Image (cartoon, rainbow, N blue to C red; front, side, top):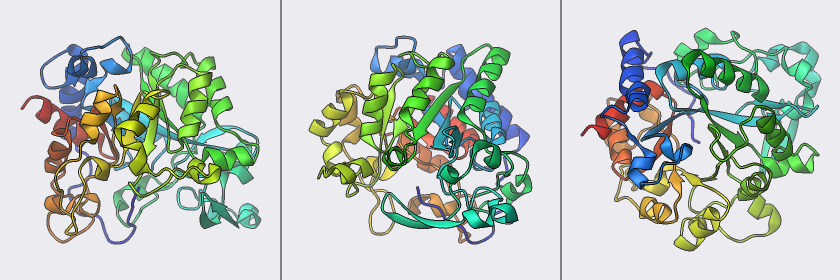
Length: 390
């Protein structure tokens, strides 16, 4: 997912009390009470059964938590997303040297922790090739959990989200088990289940290191009774074989993430499978995905491509084709800043100022997607309520 790290953030971008309360009331609250404004997936597709099909539609997935407002993949980011009313909260998982699953978007923790400021770990800095990309930095698989817990999380794109740097150093890197415990506690407090969207990162790479992700993830899911078909979590990966493996281990619904049309999943590269994402979004490819998964998470450009000018063009048939195979669609990722928005919805010249995010949400929701990943859950919830009530 693209990011930009230069420039100062525009004014008026932090979530005010009115926005937070409005999102909670118009978003999750309206859905939970069955009020007008947010439909449910079961109603749209006509076959709710107490599980993921009964989530509100459009479903708002908090991308790495409320990462537009707090450093990503911290308990603080997850808590704010839940308090805002997000329907589902995302975790990316990578392993430590001693096999614990921790929540980081990447195993390279150079940009998301203060590891560079720890002289005791200076010798851990190294260069690795991860999924064909050469990277220099510090990596979770070179740290025990105890060592990783001495680090503190920080904002990944401080140039774009200067406000978030206020919270640098407040939180540790959470383990997935800590997130499960947090979700249990919040679920009891709120009287309803806390939904999670858990992604295995670089599973083929880690399996080669003897740190396979799927088995320890399945073990944790069973320990916390989140392994059933109707459990309140999705399991997602850019590598279809990881979802296939999880499908054999647990009943929780799987989602295959899909990058650009010309790309190939890394497990396909390793296995010599010539198929690209373009092959997977055909009816034949979607049928194959539906044999072991419940949904897809395409990049937004697969739903509505952009032209050479950066503006949105005509939607593809992906939503219709995926729904025909019984698959949910949770595309990624909406962010409020100009730098991340289609050209039609940019406002002004500051790339870090907010653009017309509501206009962009409306365009994407109009395609019939079941949900969307967003760094700004409050904005997404208000947009979802607007759209469902139109």
